[in-house]
Amino acid sequence: MTLDFFIQNFINAMQWGSFLALIAVGYTLVYGVLLLINFAHGDIFMVGAYTGYFIGTFLTNNFEIKLPFDLPSWVVIPLTIVATMFITALVGVAIERIAYRPLRNRGAHRLYLVITALMFGLLLEYGNLALLGASDRQFPNLFDKIIYSIGGITVTNIKIYVILLSFLIMGILWWIVQKTRWGMAMRAISYDRLAVPLMGISVDQIILFTFVLGSSMAALAGIMYGTAFPILRFNMGMLVGWQAFIAAVVGGIGSIRGAMVGGYILGFTQIFVAAFLPSTYRDLIAFVVLLLILAIKPTGLFGVPRRTKV
Amino acid sequence: MLLSIKDLVVSYGAIEALHGISFDVEEGEIATLIGANGAGKSTTLWSIVRQITEMGGRVVSGSIEFKGEDLLKYPPHDIVNQLGITLVPEGRRVFGNLSVLENLKIAAYGRKDNKGIEEDFKRVFKIFPRLEERKSQLADLLSGGEQQMLAVGRSMMNRGKLMLLDEPSMGLAPILVKELFENLAKINQEGTTILLVEQNAHLALRYATKAYVIETGTITLSGTSEEVEKNPEVKKAYLGT
Image (cartoon, rainbow over all chains, first blue to last red; front, side, top):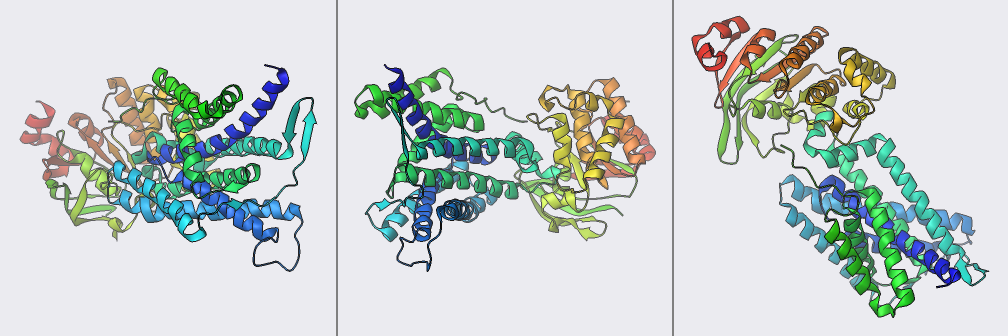
């Protein structure tokens, strides 16, 4: 293996791992506060990508309804990102309010919540198919693509943006969870949910905040995914979401660090397997590796066995 | 009357745990609710803080009034923030994954007055100096006695009017119990009314001014601590003399 070949794949793996990590974090955040596997989260990512597609297409004046003027890209990019994160967060919060909270308040068994989540995911997916049709969508070009070639390595500016932005966002998330009072409340809920209202904290409010965080990160991942791989399909959420979910479990569900590491481990395994073997082997081998990790450490890499509180 | 409970009936599913209990707590006093395991003491406290549904129970009938206001109207977090009622739960329930200082900070979640919060840290640390020594440690690493101090310290962070304590002596060495109760008396003198639930009747009666005896969901006896202590039934059943 030449060094160039390694670096090239390393960069590709960093990009792919960043998508998985950003989505995996959303699964783990919700699990941390609700002990719920939010199976709709992959489709929240899809909603993010499609919302970004519509807003981006509109702002770059490629939509049916036209703006009377052209916007410069330094306006289009941040506006697309912020608006997409906002709208996707609303969708995430709406699902919590419409579907999960009423069930929770009536003391439904957790299994029913999980199934509801799964069904809401399917609803988003097939709602998309019914409303927008089966044809793929072309994500708008928000960035002018620049290709750098250094030796045998080619890197696009988009790859660099994806990797750097992911790191930045995960850093901000870490700061929110570790240093702010909302984050402190999230950590407290994950330890002992019943004791949290005794501190004068509304658990529902913290749960809502968690959905906002997770969904807006999935939205960002959706925009970046659309920018890097511009073909959008109605079932993209399921395809990518399952992988991110598995990454979160391998990292130790409930652990934010675990979700990030799990995302990159899966990303690296997939890219490097595909680099050496036919790409049809990619997922088979990647998931065997993850199964082995779980066999050795069943709580996931950074997970701790949940203590049962008396 | 600070707290007034009337004919409170609470049940878990088909099983009735409280069969219409009534009792009062007056401002400034230390009142105690003594009784055996399973008599309904914790159920009473969790009903007051409006968390009984989370425990699988339900207030069937009766009323809980705080300063004459219907407490059942308030959501759980407002019981703490607006009414100033705090519960030190059985088994301490400190957040083990948070530091000692974070445990105190989170207890002041509803407050915005940073200066006042700082003052209350000092107040807690003055009463429990050991917490200050360990303030950056994870609460999981504290001893049982220190965790109990932290649990009490947490409920001091809201400058509560009424502090409910559920079996604070449980699992603590006698010397720590004495220290803890001396401190509770101090907190009471600073203006916090206390409702103490204890299996250790000796201890509770020594510090309380008023006592209620609860047996399988019914209040069977009430009076000043002296009166209750002298009652032959209580002597036989709870004081072992």
